[in-house]
Length: 241
Image (cartoon, rainbow, N blue to C red; front, side, top):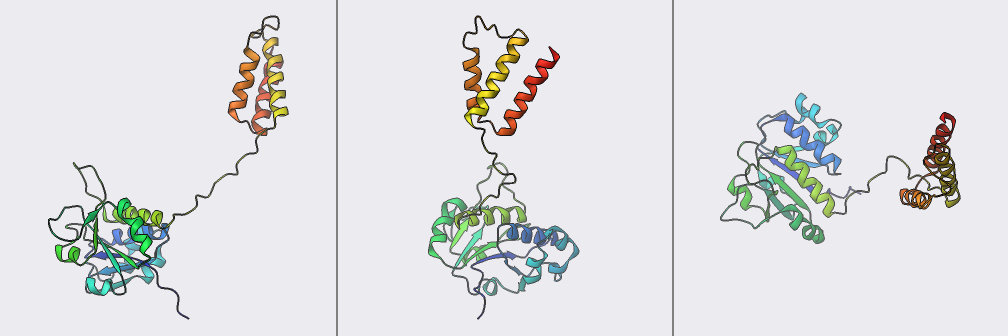
């Protein structure tokens, strides 16, 4: 039984630089996408070009599976919704949206989607844009909106992944267990003795110093290790005195 086709395709039209193709493959892979199609790239051997492989940085498998075709029609074979990407507004053609505004609704359709990117120098031609159902424009500073091709692929891939539900962020360190109230109270009492010993706290007129210290440690949500550190500091203060 054949594998289910990848529902998302990234199409690069007339790319000039091998490094951008490799970096685009990397951008796709980190967002969990794998279907890459190139339409008439400048370099015929771009998918195995040294610079492309280097910039892919671990995503060489995306390059190995990528296809080169002659026309955009071939690249969109099997696709149900195509999104052009363009910075320059057009007075004719498909409606233009910011990715974050358009992609959640597109995701809800469950259709096979392609994102189409133009060349580094001139972007997508009008005829290519007209073939698409929507045009995505990444919001940028109006004074300088020029994005590198691979950067644009990364942004669209991220926004599409978020529309699909995103990935769970994996914590790098375990959440520490909080110290219990008895341990925190022990630290307060230890610090109180140390402060009396160095003359900072007058036990005859303590005012609200100890309760304020208690509230400070409560807000800090201390772990067991942090309580041990504070008590170690208190012991060092006592020894120095």
